[in-house]
Image 1 (spheres, helix red, strand yellow):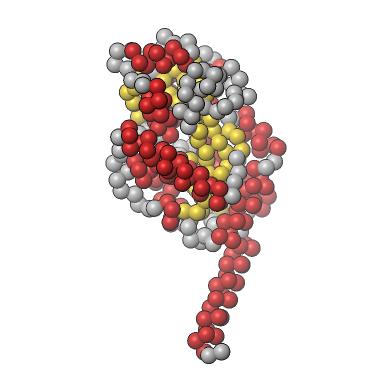
Image 2 (cartoon, rainbow, N blue to C red):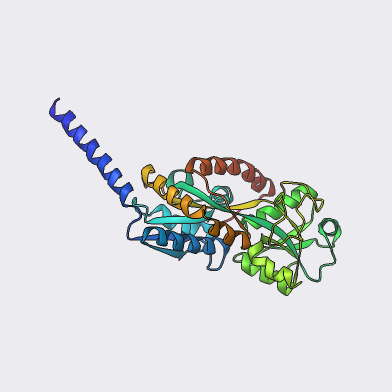
Length: 324
């Protein structure tokens, strides 16, 4: 073997050894889970629960870093610049990841090359809720009202291009409704706008609306799953309520790593996460909060995202939704 081939072989063995050592050392002393949403939101709660469980499992520190802004782009960009040791992870609605390139003319990264999916974590069913004084008692009456009300119905969203904006646009296109959108800085402020009467309706997860629904301040008309939620059993599914199935999207929160993290490390993170999320205690806790545990392989998450990019990209283009 000549000298150049020997050097090449030595380099390859060194690189393989480094990857192996890195895989064996995860997690490092501290792992940061970036959440590109405000504290108290569903992904924030999910990230904190996951971090606490992983900390108990590994004996290492897991901290949540909230970086809201620009429909999750601010926090996501932070993660794309993370190190290759798996010390920086992203907890985000995977739908936002694939729709932002359609919504924004310029992006600071390309998610396909900047991120690696680790695993799906939890799905959140979305509900259509209306303000207490809106003159509708059920979803069928809401559809009729939204077709005939002078000036249409004011819809609160978590921001232009947010999943609840896209979801309401899906309902609008499918049922021929007349909506006017009022963007807020997040879902929680949109729900507050509903409570105060600033808007007529909001689509949001059950965690942020169930207390207000049980007190009668918000009337929930339909939810997107094919089965009723155990924590809100009186709310009919979209099909039961007379809507067109598939026109209320579901939100899936997933975990991502920077693309520079080796596949071996991503696999190790995936296995650690699956072990935590598979416990009956975690499943029960999330069920009460309106979240269904839904882990996956990195390949399954990527395949789902590619399908979502096609489906929801078409909806956004047809609606003409654009962001700066």
